[in-house]
Image (cartoon, rainbow, N blue to C red; front, top):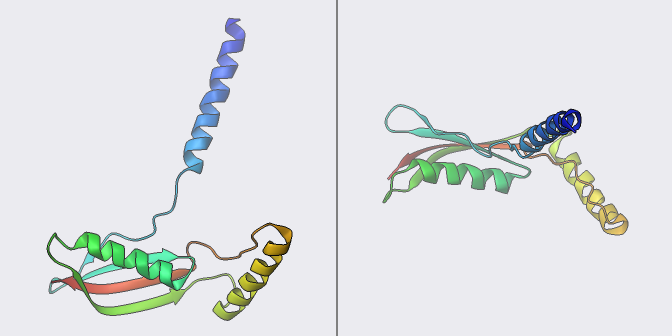
Length: 123
């Protein structure tokens, strides 16, 4: 009986470790970088431009103290997909049609496809 408990405990420990690392997610935005003249910079990422923008805005809002709001002075968007942006959209549209027929979502988008960087100050 004692000989079987040890392998079971080891197996359970390994499964728990795998389960906990599987739950780890990539952050959707960066911490704010303070620049000169009370300016800040944050970056948001997402599968599409809107999601990345929303993640960057949330990070900016979290940076500003209560009673102030971020005022964006510069915004830049960068696409980092595996194929160029227009090809990726066509592939995802075709995948959505195929997914409706097959019952399985076919999408090549990744959570890191778009980076939106905001320069802002709090007012």
